[in-house]
Image (cartoon, rainbow, N blue to C red; front, side):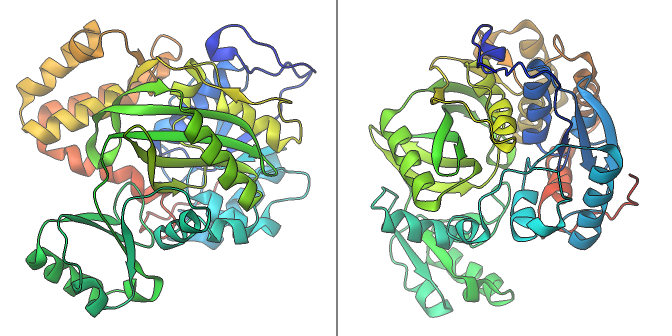
Length: 421
């Protein structure tokens, strides 16, 4: 079947005779919510597996089934059993990792039922990119740019830092939870005491100088080391937890070449995302071995979620598909949370609601990517609930933002729920 182009949101839709049955590995993250929409506008309906029956992705006309599971963080074995039972009982063809479950499944690929496909690189490739220490080692090996960086494996090595400010990164972390900006030696001493109480030294701690330029993110899909889909965007307004309120797509030939080199070196199979600062050249700071917030890409002509499905089914596009530059999108839910956190005032939240509703101010010309009410009316429900909660108590912003992380982060504490195939 050929690849066809047309409506930007459908530009990589594959017209298969029967749509595959797709199961998302969680429904609490922004990436999952956006993957639901991206797949929905490509003609798919999906199932969602998550501990939270009120998770963000469930509120969509594109979700055909919801399956409750244990948390992959607090009960990985229970989660894997639930995924196996659900995939078998409902005849899913594809398991699509939308967050850190990708790591779990890469190391436990044998638990995926026979006949169910999941595009994942091998565990050794994950190990070379997943932790902060591994990434800096890989970038050095490939001679790719990053800010001045060193690794500390003891308290003494950490406290030898003399240049400030510095970003201190523990090996693992989700939604910036493992990254701290340290302003002076006193703050570094205090952080050392915190790290002494854990197991940070064994894995190593990255110390990295601030990078110059604008924060950008690149998302890519590989088919056994070959780059088949790519898209990049610039963060215009930062959100709570380091995410994005407003973004605009960009096209960077140098970044495309670098990402292709990384994927080829790792024989990567599936989705891969990197963060970098752009100042005429990139400076790479982070990587995520999974699909990340794909709607800006879909609206720019590269539906990475659909490309990932095709790669999973061993039918990748024959040539590289790249999103176009200049597409501006917003995440209204993150805008409200960020305004509430920054001001703590109901009036400010109300003004933000007004700007979003009118598409005025900084949101002029921006398309909603997270809760696209026009395309998907059910997505208004979580947006309305969060808005109401913030109007009652603006101080709840940080707690609301943190709630989802416990559901999708591998290794984080999460509520264990009864599996219901």
